[in-house]
Figure: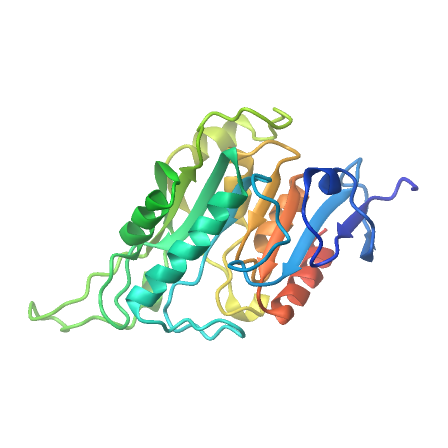
Length: 284
């Protein structure tokens, strides 16, 4: 291979093993890069249902960074985002269990979820999903508050200028930090790429940055690159394997790749998989 770097998009439905990650096969979507890294970049995009996929080996993932469906009737191409709340919690327990199976013993999980919701009835989504994650085996470490600052877009006030039934809406989301069995990392390259300034800033559990534009990205619920960038650099080593089980437009994969990690993304919708591939090529 010449000195030009390559992005490797592995076959969509091949089993992901440590051996295959170390020696991937260059199959398609071969893109020349401009010298960001001195070695091949490894990306696996899986067009499948996270509840059913067999393309990820157990105990193969170092860190999971994702924002799952919020059940707010967002119009995804291939997911029903308007379930009853009990159905939504049942679905959440199933995919959280699968992610637990995929994680290594020292695997981490950065789970971006709403604090609560008011649409179709008030629900404590953040607390409920955290409780379910602990039920299936994840251990709790901490919570980061993401101050998205979108209060100007709110339209629901409840009883306007009245104590009758006002709505209280916090313009924040949660990033719940979980781990499988050991918080201290026991494997990996032990190579860190976080700066002193980043470490000091990001270990403060209040993060402030704006959200992402649906129109600009072409996906109904994108999150900004800053979110996975911080999670990946703060909680994983260079060379670690990063999974997003609800890949969507591929933002987590982009940040994994540009920060020299192995990227794995799963999405049930083929159009979103194609969008993620295009964004990867454009971003690198």
